[in-house]
Length: 348
Ligand code: ADE
Image (cartoon, rainbow, N blue to C red):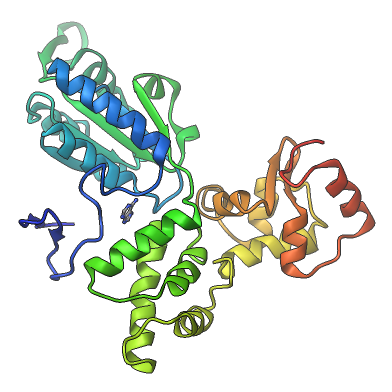
């Protein structure tokens, strides 16, 4: 991330000379259409008024472009962006120093905001609401507090876990956007755009195969594109055909829907060990020896998008498509549950 510089065509060059695949304008940014359309309106309106954009919270699974969007918002607003993260701020004074250095209408991007220490979080409340820092000096009866005014800025918070934000913090965001896993069509467009930037030629059917195995996530699609390019270089004179793409992905143990070892482990536990559920998150986490937060944030969103599992008030359940994908016939109890919950996991 450090020492990036803009070059004429607005793409970024990073330290290692690799061209960043991140889009830098709303028009370059593919997918998340609703979020993008709304953000465009808010950016245009605040710009026209000459005011700072209201604070923005971006949430959703990792790899969907929260950081990218934050940079795009700042660039479209024509302001500077300062980047930090919840775990990166160790003391209230670090945050205070960042905030006092913000220029009028600048953006502060705070990644993993749910990991901000609660005592530090309190510094944010007056900063977000009144653009002020409350500084207390002295102790006991002689303690006084003074208020320091800040320039009006925009906080962009990003999190994979909106549910972990405290109410007071969440309430101070005027714009809250949820990013969803991408469709295969959007990922095809992203793969083709990245291939163009990397000067790689890729066949249409190969791009679709790669997109379909990327778990709805551009970060994964771009990583797989680079690995498939390696296979193509070694085995196929650099030509990314469908067959070399299938070979590369199979050799990397990524299944036709993009499920990897961890996804299959979770699905198998739910389908086989727990007979399709319902199974509580913590029970499932213990069974597969995985952190409950990782299951919720990283593994489940794509399985839910595929219609393989659903979250119900009584726990996680496996849906018909999951049994089919694993080639397991549901027990009579599981079959009863499957007819009670429809393909989308809703009570029919
Ligand atoms: N590269 C990574 N994410 C992207 C997106 N949403 N649009 C275009 N290119 C991308």
